[in-house]
Length: 628
Image (cartoon, rainbow, N blue to C red; front, top):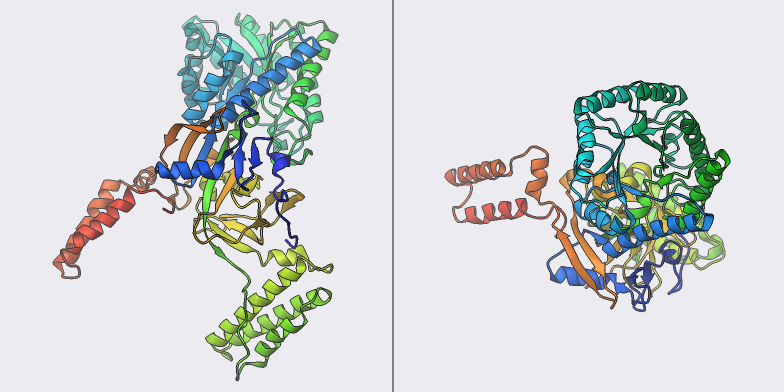
């Protein structure tokens, strides 16, 4: 909080976490680099927003960059294929995208398109997701991996899809599910493609450690595995069991956890093979993380490995284990969702206004002032670095005493207002000295004086993980980055909820409770970007205060440094979100019209006002849920 920066210092650590996708251009604006054409100039993000605004597309919006999605899919497949060639692995890699990570049609459609050259498939954890997967023309060897609890209808559809040539693998999660699959397969007289989820004992570190190990929700233990093998053998379906699935975890921070979990998964694969199970695929689930902070450390929001290192470790570990057991190398499958899609989306919003906890000037002393007001004002005469803590102590003591006097009626409203103004001016002076003098008061104290920047978005709708699990995402002003930020702020959203606040930020020198920002310009918008929000954030949001989905725009970055608008999805209108919570918008219009007509009948309203009132109501009900 007490740090000052000289432009153009990388205050926000963009070079650390930006992956050379997010950069700062010569104008001090955030630029988007095209990883598919690295020699192309970056595209100014504020210029993109200006162009979209001219087309009638407003912030807040989710901006998806199709080029980033294509790059991540290609990069992951290239990393696995390079590792396979380098290690001498005698199997293939066939990745699948977990639809639950981002179920939006524009995202899934492009993943299928970009993944087709790599035989890239989809993972479905529910009946709706299987229906989505089966509506896509996947490449010939691409997999559809069916996880989660499955009823007969789910299983029947998965088995029947085999008749269309889909490689739909039903992953058995429990002994009960084995019985259901055997029953449906015999009824249909179709051999299913089966997998089994093996519960590993290794537990990963990080935020999602409880999703792994003995207490993980899904998968079979060793006793259940033996029971499953016997049931399938007795039913004449053991030859259908082709895939072993073991979920390593989510956002695994430490690559050595990956090694240990893969080693254990291989032990089960070897043992099942020796039991006569004709396995051909080893599915290692999700877990490949995203370095949100750029720290390259094993923390909740960072990872200590690259995508290339992850792929190499997986391929090497499986190769060594299978060679030792003299077993054919299986086709490797991963369900990496976060690493594929997170970087491709960003949330963009404007700052509406700021609440400052300081004041540039202080009122002069007046005759009749309470002596505590004079004492408070006198502090301005001894603010120096050596006495900064003393000034802080005195200012807070006098201010609190004056508040107590006001509460008891001993000083009036105008005196209290003057006292608060003097206090805020003292805080401005203290913050100024704290940035330059050798002796400073604590960051914790100064954090209490941070500005509040009120922003045009809903935390609960667009960044639910920030609210629910303290997920960190890079947050950066999109302009003025060639100027030193002169203020510090926390961000609040447009909801009327005190939880709608962001107060942990990624900076170049670590995580901080405030964000360095600029004094808001008077005549131009001040935009903020929240990056790497493509995983989960678009799907998990709720309708707090009935703020709906934002506008969504998908663009492609061109080789010449421009961009193409590929798709626009308008954000929810008020009438749409009303219908989500069981209100009929037309009924609401009719009821409002009835009250207007009643007011005219009683003389409380003039007839000529009817059109204005009804027009205002209809405009609102058909309008965007966010600030316009």
